[in-house]
Image (cartoon, rainbow, N blue to C red; front, side, top):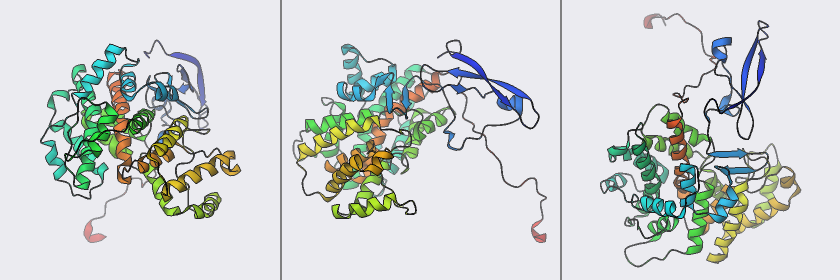
Length: 437
């Protein structure tokens, strides 16, 4: 939205209790969601900064990509509700939507899928990077290193001021991320690397590279492929979360796109962000059996007990996570397809789900199972190791990072990120020579 397109409401009056002076700050209105107070002139006029740890009340940028209303349980990509996209679109359509702002025509979709498919293969020398890691290296550590190193192999797409370079880099990152993720997995289990196949769809290709071996033909299960495609859609973007903000902050310095996405992967790695579905499996392991669920439910209700049920409720969604219902349906489809029986962790998960949807404590506090709860169960049922859960999140989120990065580069009002601070350390001190201390 250009400066002239923005709607300015009546200004916000701020009174300085120290001096009695009043300051008028503009209030800017978006197309939907809360208005924002424009504080860009605040420091120059008042000699004060705002203080907002975690930036939870601060709008750091203007964006047309994703809208979230946590109170109402709304998540939209470019105006389209997430459940509609998950039901009616596939991941490639959603990628096109996030990048270009509109759903593709049949011809545009076909060309986009072709262009992505023909960028999926990695430079052969990159395989040497994988072999340089220890076998027990965490796949996210491998992802950080390999994605950051892409700029050493693809010099023809690192000029951020060239729109064509940005497009090529965007396509390469979206296309190569599943190949990097699958190769990291293959390396960790000592199996041969599998090359991508141009005749397979995006999610199918990913599952093929993860599970196939040169020994025999591998056919991708369509139910699992559709489940993976939905998971990718549901995780494709989520507004200005920690990893997306990291990508934007790194990009604001003019860093190349591969370095920016590597920084996003590092941020996503944290257990409070992308590692939440891994934490769900760890929690289920800690519970151990269905018989012990009541004991752990009581622990979760005890404010003095440090135990927390992972995968319930959400920091942003105060009512319900709009992705969770789609993921719940997908979860049960996968479990039915695989005929999973006598799997202790999955039994515990299903019983926890039942309790959370019926127990007065959970219903009253709106602690419903969220997207991380179900995605962890799905990955477990599909035989994907826990250490790879966050890697799959990174594969999905790459298109969101790329779309947000492109938007930031093209925004003339964006500046290099430079948060301020409230300094509480020592004031000026006199230096004492070493021999006098």
